Amino acid sequence: MRLMLMIPVLALAACVEKDKVPSGAEDFATFCSACHGAGGKGDGGAAATLDRKPADLTRLSARNGGVFPGTRVMAKIWGYTGGRDGSSPMPQFGPLLQGELVPYDGGDGIGTPTPVRLVQIAEYLKSLQD
Image 1 (cartoon, one colour):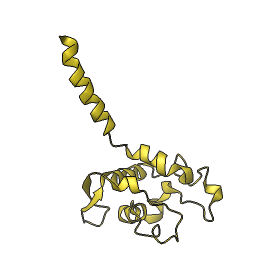
Image 2: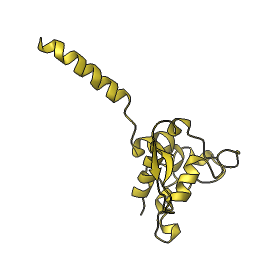
Image 3: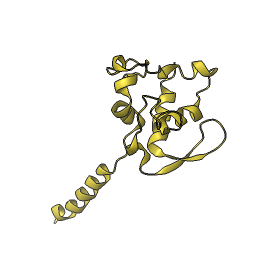
Image 4: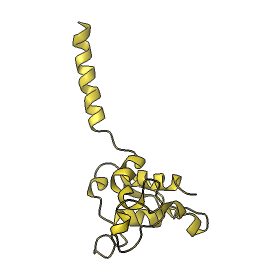
């Protein structure tokens, strides 16, 4: 009888795990580290094949007067600044645009509905600042 009660619980646990949203660090490793490197310094394995060296993402705040430029970062990773017309090597990350939208204020005081996985990457980048 006890085994019969466990089967639905295990099936539910499998469904929850299947729908697990990757963390910002996991998505960064999957989508960004090839160019930007595991630590975000622009030294990924694919960096040498690019015409322009990838940005050192650990210096974003330092280059912005000590303030993390969340709105600019979000615009870049969401594709508003260069990724769509081919002028930037930044790819579009379709899977990251799927799923739940959450309000994101990148520092401009405006909570914009934003895909949660993009928010998680932006927050991960914020944690990498020197």
